[in-house]
Amino acid sequence: MNIILLGPPGAGKGTQSQRLVARYGMRQLSTGDMLRAAVKAQTPVGLQAKAVMDAGELVSDEIVSALISAELESMSDEMGAIFDGYPRTAEQAHALDAILDQHGRSLDHVIELDVNVDALVERITGRYSCANCGKGYHDVFEQPRQPGICDKCGSTEFKRRPDDNEATVRTRMAEYRAKTAPILPIYEKRGIVRRVDGMEDIDEVTAAIARIIV
Image 1 (cartoon, rainbow, N blue to C red):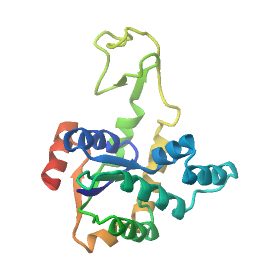
Image 2 (cartoon, rainbow, N blue to C red):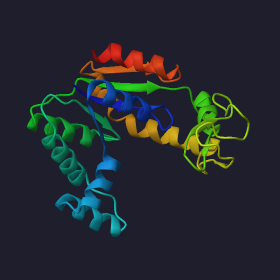
Image 3 (spheres, one colour):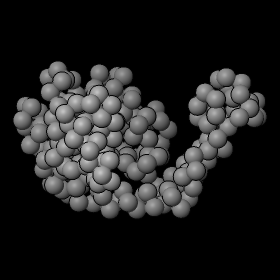
């Protein structure tokens, strides 16, 4: 099973990817994570990527394709892949087709977590976490059992991400729409795009994804 999981920041892609990994033994292929790992391990592709990034330039599609190909090469044929953050352009979509074909794989589903912008703003701007252990909370949906005291470690220090504000969230959403607009028609023509209500309860979203891929 090979799927692309789409959705703007805050839609829950990370949570759902982790659940797919745990439940089905799939591997999440996040281009950002793979780049950082390759650079840290000083692989040939990692060294090439580091040189590009150190020069202040964007990593090329060729480098990203090489990373994905190497990751697929390291996986067993039975292990499914979740593509997160790639592809983002029509060119990358066609490149992914070639990579999958090279490894005897094909794309089964493109699943988009559909969200309401206003509700997403509320979800993200209300987030905060324990400054000590990192446990997450929310102004509306999940507050500590004792106000001002972390349930997990007892700390009284909390923090918010500086970019968790309305203007940033709406900008991210606009960027996401602009990036995904070119690739969705490619997969819609193949009949493999499915949409899930990303504003539902986390368990409901998980169940909806399971109904698609099983």
